[in-house]
Length: 355
Image (cartoon, rainbow, N blue to C red; front, side, top):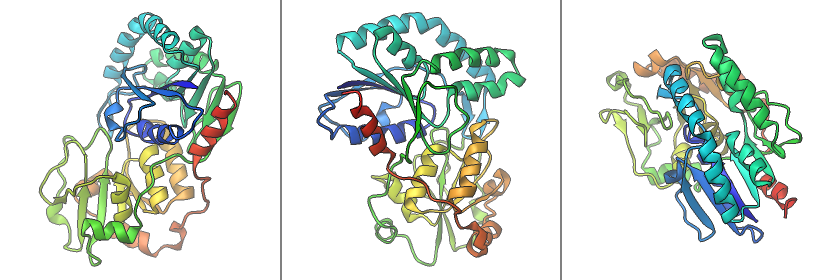
């Protein structure tokens, strides 16, 4: 089987989880090649003779000024430009798929590859926890353009051969066939104790990992001088983060840093939630702008995680004492439910049906 696997470049969550799936699929004999198509291919930290990389953008997502701010005007302009290229893209990628004898298309989470699969005449599988029609429809209250676009995308998604729905799912379009699969996410390679030792973390210090994904904290300066001596902020790969007052360790596998930390402070996103779940690290979360997925991720935080809300002002002013005291004392902060793990295995089982 030769797979054309498109991964959205919106943030790191899509490439993080689908990269994990790709790594698992490459170990299977029935997989001849995987053509990874994305603008985030630099995130992939492994090589394999069966893995072919193709840098290409097949969806727009949402333009953001930073992790917490949505830019709708820029999003609309990018969508206009993308619409102008869709016909030529469809022609070029149809030729590519036929030349490389692609037998199945997997998409996380754009609808365009589903249209491509129809053109080529091969099956397509949607994988994700939201579709872009649902995200864009939220902005129809501001501009009817987004409502019209959502109607179009909903139709495109409906042509998928099947859909594999991840945990933390938003409402989905009417797929012909759909299956809920287990959690997909990167796991730590080390135990908490070993990870803390390897990062040189001290037992009398509380380490709070700042995780703000691809868009970072541009324009914000954290008032680290307000931190007590027993709290240390940690960051790695956060655009716009300051150097003073923040520990930036060397990291070879980010989930190990998640495991070593006492808490992760973040805006909710699928990728970091999955990594915290597997690392068993509590979450302090803040707002992320008008992005409708947020509501469903907060619901997941309430059900499956030790978590607490902290507004951005308190994060900027480094006022963590009160929320940490709550997290450490309230029995109700314990998770109510457990998630089904190892969704990668579910994907393998479904793909075997197409061999």
